[in-house]
Structures are given as structure tokens and as C-alpha cells.
Length: 323
Image (cartoon, rainbow, N blue to C red; front, top):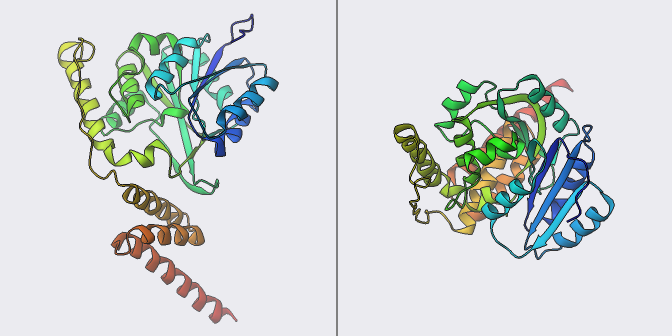
């Protein structure tokens, strides 16, 4: 990699693995930032879907990009490599299938400038479907103490919205095995133990949900991983260090519900419910039907269909009465 001479204020860190369909939107959203004092570090973790070629073309025209392609080592190794490669005081995480709003970096840097005690800052995220249709907005607590409370349920921040002080993330130990999902939550918990956390209430990120995402393919195993991660946090509270920090290991058995159709059903059902709440009835019906195609007897999916039909029926009666 060729490094610019000047040290940037922010390092934007993005791991990539087989997200060619969405990659250009993610890359361009970083180029469009109103805050410009950043470097953009991208590691292609062994993609075979055309992502590498997209990244090569992008890096050739965007001088702030430091890009490397290599064989697959997994998400944890890639995240740690990115974190160690960053030269900025602040690091902003970015997923390669999402979109950052143009003001994201500016708003977050401004918050760090105003609060020297802040170590990690997230933001509200607008969830979108694979085509970019609106699903729902995720908002998280603003204040540190509220964040600590919600972390005990496995929430409190959407990781790719976060910006953090690089030195503090390294001090916390970076990302750890053996987490197939939740490696980011594990780091956020350790950060919350050594400094102040916060969330902006402004929606600065578009969080894309799709069938091949980690949240879909491994989402059913999240409760198991979450519980192990929270147990490690309790170990640190009791003794100062957890078993991994003491050189031990952690074995997490494969969870249930790893069947692809089951995972797809869960995702489509969730998207249908979000679209229904936003009264996007055509989109809700589309995903309810997709859920029923995977599980024809799904009561939850049929309830959504019936609610849509009821709404359409009531609307038709109202239109008829006004004529």
C-alpha cells in the first residue's frame, strides 16, 4: 500500500467479502462525505464474486483509499488487521453492503471534539431491504448509563455506525475468537468498561438487510453467542479479566435453526412486519408471501397477510362511500 504523507484525522475501515451487488453504493457513500480529512482502508477477504475488481477500479481513482486483496482469513482477523493499519486518531467502521449519509463523519467527529471523554459513538440507522426499500429506523440510547443497561440485553449500538478512538479499541484488545457472530458486541462491551459511550439520535446510516448477510445466516445463533459474551463480561466484573484475557479458551457449539430455508423465513417475516408497521402494504405482502413459500403454515406470516387484506378491504369501502 502507498501511504499519504499526512496523518488523517479519521481512518474509515471496511472489510469486504462477496458483496459486489452493494459494494459501489458503500464505497461512493464514503467518497461523498462532507468531512474530508480521512483515509479509507479496505481489505478484500478473499472475495470471488467480482468485488475485487470493483475495489481495484475504485482505489485507482480515489487517492485516499488504501486497498489490499488477499486470501480468506475470516472477519475477526480482517477487522483486527484494519484496526492495526489505521493511522487516524479516530476509526469509523463501515460495512460493505451499507450506506453512510454524507454528514456521518462530520457529525461524529464534531461530537468527539466536544467531549474528550468519549471513546465510542454510534448513531441511529435506517434499515433497508436488498433493493433499498425503507423497513424501519433503529434508535439507541444517547447516554452512557442507558447504553450499559441495554447492553445487558445484547443491544445498545449498531456496530457499523460506530466511530471510536483507535487507541482505546486497541487497549480493549480488539476483536476476539471464537465468535462467528457478536465479535463486535464483545468489543463494545469491553470499550464500555474503560470509557464513555454515546449514540447520536440523527439517522446517519443505511443498514442493509439481505439473505446472505451474517445477521441472516447466523442470526438464529445470536442468543447463544450473546449469552457467552455477557458471561465473559461478568467474569471481568468479578475478577478484572475474563477467561480469554487469562489465556483460556471458549467453546461455543453450533446452535439450532441453521437451515437455510428457516433463516430465510425469519428474515422475510421480519421484513414483512417492518413494512407493515410503515404501512408499505405492497412490500409487506411481498415478504409475507416469500415467508409463506418457505413455511406455508406459518401463523405469523398469515396474520400479516390477513392484516393487509383487512386494510385493503376497509380502504376500498371508504373509497366507495366517498363516491
